[in-house]
Image 1: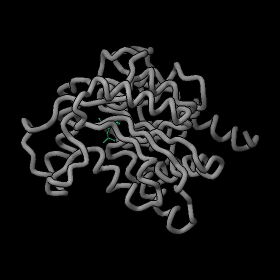
Image 2 (image 1 turned 135 degrees about the horizontal axis):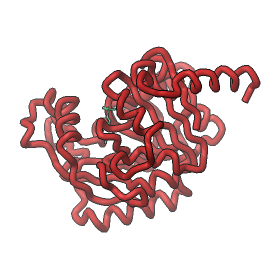
Image 3 (image 1 turned 180 degrees about the vertical axis):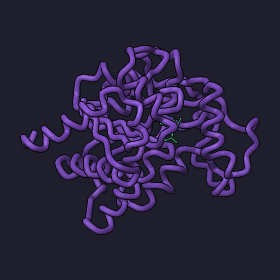
Length: 271
Ligand code: GLP
């Protein structure tokens, strides 16, 4: 596992975008797993810049998003800026700015008539695409990946989950409140890829930014593996695992100096 620490959010985002761009340049039809939340927004902005200024080509790239609120989806009948679906988020923050093909975008359908059946279908779509080459991840305040709340099995698959109080509060304050929603109007279920699904991605990259994430990042990277902090499954992954943090998010890591030293040595030896 590589733990990369950058001075601030901008540098963290540029580092992450460069890794993603590397996948796209090496394998133009690569399959990317994408995440929502405030954390990856800077990375998406940088990818958009690379597309515009450097010709980064998304025309063959395929994407699978981690999750979606149940009951929400890209619903153009609703006033656009009130739609808090992750589908709209992805459209606004990335997809509408790049040359990705609509048919290559996959986001769990929060409006699916039969959600359980739909979850099995989503897994099948990932399989048919040949699996995910690189899964981008944030980390929730309670340590979740996607919407795999504490207590989710580390072998879990794509399924419908109930959101816990902390996640509802976090996401209300970050998104729904600004759009004028009442707390009671928030969807309290979601469809999420499972931890088992995420671990099947060939490589993963987790981002975290800000002092508010420092404690949970330390638990995730340096605490015991536990289903109470589902992102600790990071230690079970066998591929390339990269964690990109800004200084504030890294500030509670016991082995902070070690990670810095490893990065210095790797660059010195060209590894
Ligand atoms: C939501 C998403 C997660 C994301 C998390 C953190 O719960 N389902 O995928 O990692 O929020 O969001 P933020 O980056 O805004 O802190």
